[in-house]
Image (tube, rainbow, N blue to C red; front, side, top):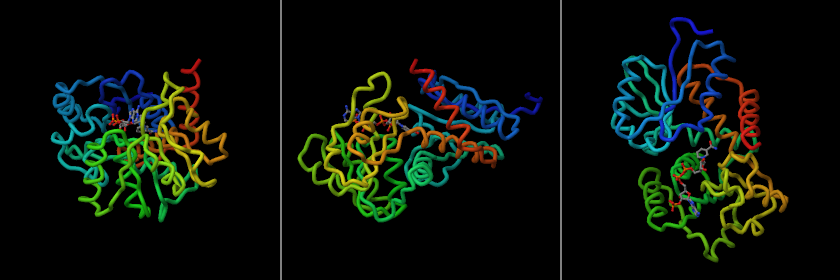
Length: 289
Ligand code: NAP
């Protein structure tokens, strides 16, 4: 039950109709006994400044930021913390003492999933990222901080790959190698890989038959194959890896850890992983029927 002092939270994006965050955060608040209410708000680019002013004026606890505002939101914030500073992308905002503080939990959420769900330590490892969009950027910056040995960026747009590897070099001093999809070099890269991550939307519902073109059959037997897509829970890419007897990691864990991190930033409390994972898994299963 809400009392008069209920704190508001929410997600700003466009579109947001399919966001699972309200289910997740409202359940997390309930599990923690927090008097909070989380709602989704479809906010266009033109509405973004007014929506952020409303966060201050209505004294929200905080908000999540999703597509397409993760970079555009930065000029309206008072300061950035941690990975948000490094990546220039924000997905969580805390309102504290009338200050809007921006965070990015994408990279840390992925790292927690890697550690807790797959028992994988990236230090000294060779990592291959398929796709060079926003999620790949977050993962690349976070994995470099974990002292990986080598990073291959695989994309279809030479300019975009160049921009990400230049940003990594300038901000961290790390040199990633760029490779185009469809080239023979992918066989050699697959053979060296310890971790391959699909960061493209290929395979996402409803086009579940799609998968990134990568020679999984060349990967070593203990190479972890990971997919950020979580709907479906097991993508065609991961099924292919399973058939090759390679270890796999789906995208739902990352989503859950990101939600946990956001809740921690806002409330200082840590909601439990398992019931929240189960909640989202059930919602995704229902959506499939
Ligand atoms: P994004 O910024 O749009 O980046 C997508 C990347 O995939 C781009 O590099 C894009 O290439 C590439 N791509 C798209 N279609 C392709 C194709 N047919 N062939 C080759 N490359 C292709 O999106 P994002 O925000 O990074 O998200 C990517 C995926 O990760 C989405 O499915 C999202 O749901 C998922 N994700 C999951 C989590 C989680 O918590 N599990 C978190 C974040 C994102 P171009 O740049 O050339 O278009």
